[in-house]
Image 1 (spheres, rainbow, N blue to C red):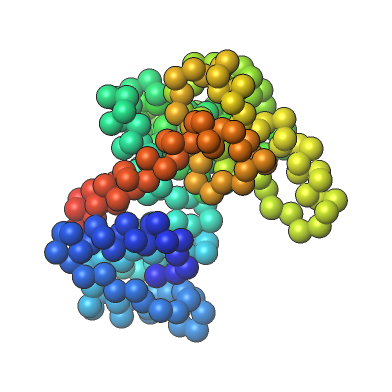
Image 2: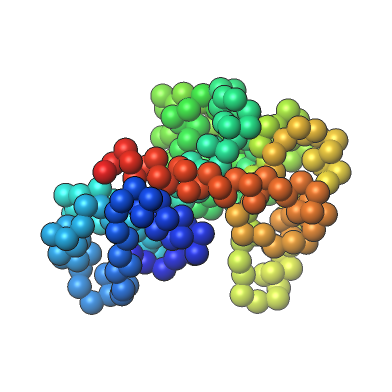
Length: 251
């Protein structure tokens, strides 16, 4: 349900078929004409589970709250848990363990930043968001996750010091703006945080670099994608495995 980027839909469909199921794409837009609560009650008559990609996190919450069958979050504007589960699977396969993993997320608090913090709340890993001042993750949200967390969660405005000893460097697109003046302001704020080969080489010799949607020359240099970007592509294999694991555990 919802609008899809192809890797996730393809991976889910392949996984469902491999496990003997049948995926069906439900057309339409959630909460457009009929309330979500009514739509999900129709669907649960025919399906064993729902994989949804919704425009807002509130839509996902309403979907899950109304359903008597499992609902899998395939992405909202707040978080993208399957993507990070796949990356964690890749990292564990390469590293041998997730214990004491140090992750540096460079960028604003996007739907990719949030699930890294959520992972640190449940796993013994360290996650630091690095960003310009004014773009930090919501303090209340961070405090709620930190309470009782198994890992460590933090925010920094200092990229150079945060990169020391990192196992994973993760980034996302710069904030989107509509006019030239705002775009120039964003570039001035975020360009000093661009991931470059020199930063990876001198600060994090053995780190893996990750990115989902790449804008070369902005959040990441073109050279990084050619020299250090292999993790970006290799990790996508594990998206399929992670989503299969979710489906298997729920269904």
